[in-house]
Image (cartoon, rainbow, N blue to C red; front, side, top):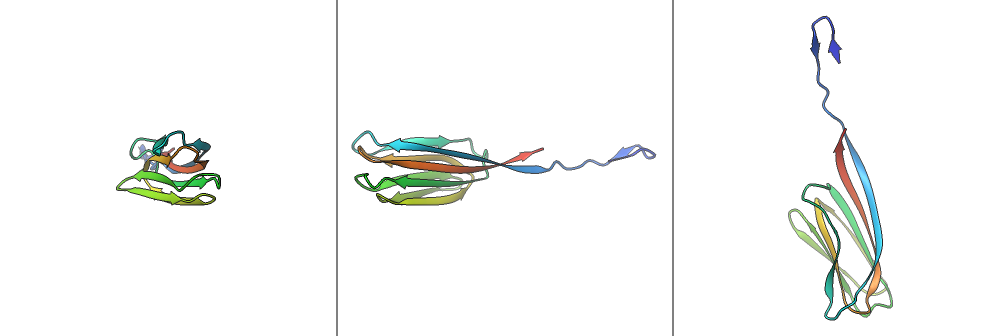
Length: 117
């Protein structure tokens, strides 16, 4: 806002909006021993929060390991066949699923980013 008589303007601080991004997909393990499958990654401080969910098919041969890397630490999810598990973390930077041959399932990620407007 400007005061025309005093020729001064007050600066408004920019408002932030929260942007949500949803990603989903399928995975299938193709090797034994089980290997980490990179699902998603982003630079540090790109996202303020993320919720990561993995479903392990009941046809899978064993448990899966989902690894969410965030600042300041990493979080592991152990998902048994026929089950799903979800976890929310602050400042996520990467997500992998470790699956062996014959393992399969689905994953979804909800990401939140603060954008100055």
